[in-house]
Amino acid sequence: MLEHEQSFFTISFIAINYIFSEKNQYAYKLDGFDKDWNYVGDKKEASYTNLDPGKYTFRVKASNNDGIWNEEGVSLQITILPPWWQTWWFRLLFILLAIAIISLFFYLRLRNYRNEQKKLSELVKLRTSELENANTLLIDQNKQLDELNISKDKFFSIIAHDLKNPFSTIIGLSSVLIDNENGLNKEQQKELTRNIHSSTEKIYNLLENLLMWSSSQLNRIKITPSFYNLTNQIYNVISLFDDYA
Image (cartoon, rainbow, N blue to C red):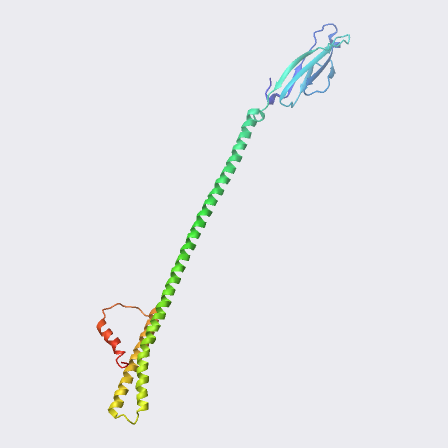
């Protein structure tokens, strides 16, 4: 049995025939390497180099001085061991290692894919939540806008109603002046003129309040809460209807 680095070797042999031994002839063959017998005359050795690992059978036969061959000859079993990287256990270990590396690669790829899917799912949930919140906010804003529009319409309706009374008073008093221009004395004319002036001031104040409210809606003025005499304001409102009454 030889190691793989001992693949170069020489085998010596000799036939036991002492009668004209110089006439002995030899032939050898290495099963697994040589296809035919090598007839080498009286040469008594055989050399081989770089044999592959494996099992071989070296055979040698000889003829005596009369040329009679001993066909049975003799044989020698030769085994050349493979290097460790060509052994079956190393190949098995290499295959198992390759399978482990490939499995690890696919496992890491699968884990990375699952992590990406998880992140994508969380991102979708986040975006969906943001859209739902934005939609809810938009609905609330639309609702507030509708309420503001209703409040605005109601406010303008109130303003229009409040403006109607002073304007009616002015129209009524001015009609009296026109129709009775010559039938009224100076004191009566002054009284009508004062009432028209008072109604005009009330209209101006209402318009000024309307402009102030409009500015507050546009955030152009700063609202500063303060104490307020509600009684005076009630009397001011009642006074709007005095002339009309």
